Image 1 (cartoon, helix red, strand yellow):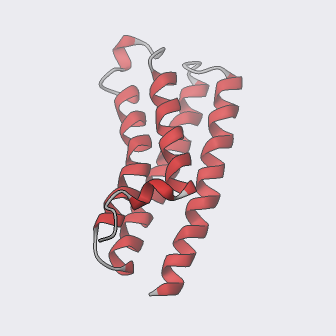
Image 2: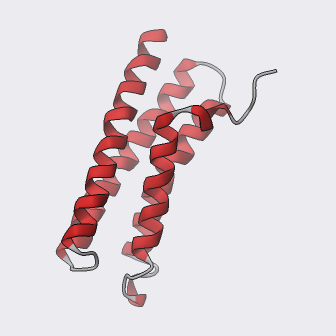
Length: 122
């Protein structure tokens, strides 16, 4: 029987998980009035990246996996914009933004490559 946790073996999931953790840490410093606004939205978008990879793996077949990977990629795009917006509000430093932007770009490259592999297998 194949392990249900097989997604943990994939670099794209590991990087997406790392990105979500780093964003949770960075948003701890956001103003309290943003708790239910930008903080919440950025955290949800970032967490959606690895969780949709996980959910896609739990489904049967490449068609459904591809669908969840598309959602993950869209959440990554949302995350990148919200990071940019947060930097412009001075909620995160330029250095922190650049670090998170670099990590999110690495996740994006790996995720896009994985999407292409899954689509090719359909």
